[in-house]
Length: 185
Image (cartoon, rainbow, N blue to C red; front, side):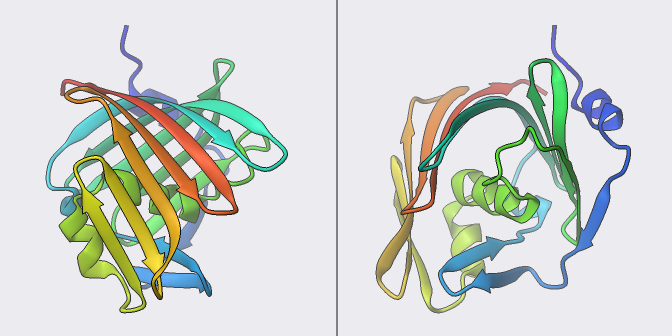
């Protein structure tokens, strides 16, 4: 039985924090990129179920995610042990998010949006929004984000079709293993 993301988001919507994001792209730290691409720039509608394993220097944690993208909205719900531990919605102008202490610390709302766009958005859409100091080199199985020529994040892909595995490594910070299955809409 497919779980409706709308139901999960409604269950976890109490106490949402809204963080309006003024521009399409900002940088919050010298080497950190924050992407804020529009939902429409994804280029299609999609619904994915994901198992995400977050690895930091001192912790490994797994969380399930339900991701839906359409031309007007990005919706993500995180579930752990049958409980919603975080939700995120992005309409291209404002980021609404609610997270609990059970969501890995590395997954802040802005970081979640940036990571999912770095991994899943079309390369051309990401490249259009990068500040001049950043570059994105990509082929069918790998993406490398660099700042001033120094790699800061690498994405590797395995699989094809509706089942895809992505490994996102933020060099020196954390790693995400993302097992995804695309649901038909």
